[in-house]
Amino acid sequence: MLRKRTLIVVAACGFALGGILRADEPAPIGPVTLANVVAPAANAPDEPLAAEFSLERAKHFLDSAALNWQKQHDCMTCHTNYLFLLARPALGAGDEAHRAVRQYAEELVTRRWKEKGPRWDAEVVMTALVLASNDLATGGKLHPTTAEALARMWTVQHADGGFEWITCDWPPFENDHEFGATMAALAVSLAPEGYAQTPAAVAGIAKLNSYLANTPMPTLHHRLMLLWADTYRPGWLAPGERQSLLDQLLALQHDDGGWSSASLGDWPRADGSPQDTKSSDGYATGLAIYLARRADVPADDQRLAGGVRWLKTHQRASGRWFTRSLHKDSRHFLTHAGSNMAILALSACDALR
Image (cartoon, rainbow, N blue to C red):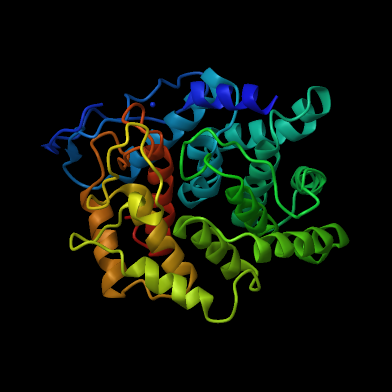
């Protein structure tokens, strides 16, 4: 059954590298809805850079990518609409695009899981996480559906404290089981109104802590996910580990101000070619800035200011931030994740304008 599920994800998850050009902005854009959504053009490394930073184009791309994925694939995935619910409140929660994706996530819990069951355990954990994060960002109240999703999360936790995950060789999200544990830690840490102190959460956290103590995280990326969780609920990291991880991350900054996703792990590419650790990209740059801010690094720190400059000068004409796939040069869906992380980073630095 797991093999069947993995094949479904691989089918959903795949241009030649070229030079970067600048271009005039395209025609004006308007609100995106399920009724009018048009699939964004494919994620291409040679898409021209925007003439200037545009928040509206970023919003348009994120809304289009998330709604189109929902409409065309009838599912949620880490790189697109799950991360959308983490980042989109920074751009306003009242738009139809945000409401539609939030509603879809809720209906996984209230309808699909009751009628057909979850597609895989990862869907349970990620849905609980993004609903909890979305609750925190849009009023700070734990929604009943979020509480239901969190309760379901603990039912799929293994006896050793870990979680079954999708492993279809699409790093950093769908590559190993350890990532699932970090997402569960983040979910319970973000959940508002003291959820982590409830009996179910306390029991789940104890098992999760045991798993983490006995299972070294395979990449810096996954350890950074625990740093993220630790900034909301301290205790996932040992004393001094937060600063050590932050130092490692900041040391990976390039001279142009950005970071490279390939520097956050040692994932092999499908064709055996080396990863590109020299080129900065949206996902790693956004993640580094956002986590540094969560760890109380000031927004005017020269390293973060350099990262913000990189983001504002490397947005593409469509509004996205290109991030090369860590697996193979086909669809580069990590660009969707990178564009959401860029918004989180800019928001954390009060730099959305």
